[in-house]
Length: 154
Image (cartoon, rainbow, N blue to C red):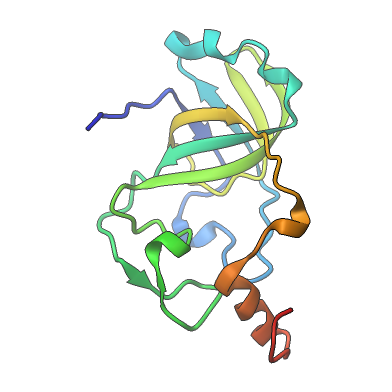
């Protein structure tokens, strides 16, 4: 087992978990700044060429985990690994953000959904070869259909 340590921290407008948009139709448009620690700044070389980044981070304020839970976007229980719940056995979060610009050790991004001061564990360029038409949204598509009054999902 490895022990992760932060490579940086994020500044966001969200001070409390209740501030982060959740549920059906939630939009993640908030801007933030990921500040990389000096020891890791060299690792940002050439990152400017990517439009989007995958950010791995720690749910550092989550106290426990639940294997089943009811997400804000559905009234049915789902397994933690089929949700984006912060109550995970390993409190690791993943967010895709748009890279607006880099300023030295700061990455100015859009699409943050983490709390202000959250430790950043890793950053990777977003590279996906999966066509959008091939993606499935699982139970979330069913919940969206129920919310919109449709009985079935195509």
